[in-house]
Length: 364
Ligand code: PMP
Image (cartoon, rainbow, N blue to C red; front, side, top):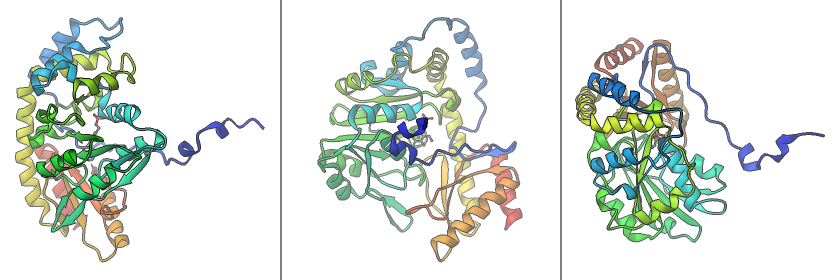
């Protein structure tokens, strides 16, 4: 019998694939992107910049211009920065470098799903030290994280700050306590940095085991171009470089990201608008029958009020579907500890937020 599927690794066959989403014509507030069109000044500058570039040759594999621009933006040296095809690729590269079969990644659920997915498809295992939740506030279980990190098989600890999907940030002293409590690799994922404003990047010199990841997909509105970057000591960055494809970020995206940094004032002005809009949306969402959690990012986490996990899940599913029917796509979270009956809504443009609220009114 010729069945090539039997050669697929069993752990890969067991994976339930990521479901592609349906995009309605209407309001898309499910993926935490910057909802605004690119600023006019950026479009103008990018048109000039891309025209001056050749695309018939391979891109600069070392992304020198972009790393130089990022150095000015972050205060780290170019040799302390690696760029990647989105920060999703950075997660893979870091796990390829430090993790793998028989080794563990320590995470705190609920958090960004890619950490567990990438760990598993690379043959590693996940150790979950769940967030603690008290009076609507999520915190890291610092002692639990240190104990898990110091297990023989653990290599990488990932802290998402602000955390996706719950939206909160963590106390810097808690992150520092984890860094002091283990010499394993501690990643701080700052995908939403521009909405929060505080970073661990300035402490890379102090902690040789610290890696900070960021992305151009959120505040800088380049989700479709796939650019992320990773900052760590020069010694760690040098090792991670060894496992990336030589031309992992295409020439257009490198240019678009470097130009976005040059035009950062225009994007940061959009961030200010999003933050102001977030406050309005937060107060309006409190009118409905669900718990609205505080947020340090450009999205809002909600939990339905039901007696059981099943009833909360059913309520969340019906709201998600009701909004979808009215042309508004929000994120229904998959369930599991802390996530049963929860939803996540990205702050949209003012008009989009109005349409979301009108749809909710119509359903209630
Ligand atoms: N980290 C977090 C916390 C995210 O929310 C996301 C995007 N959903 C990513 C990383 C991946 O971003 P990118 O588009 O750079 O791959």
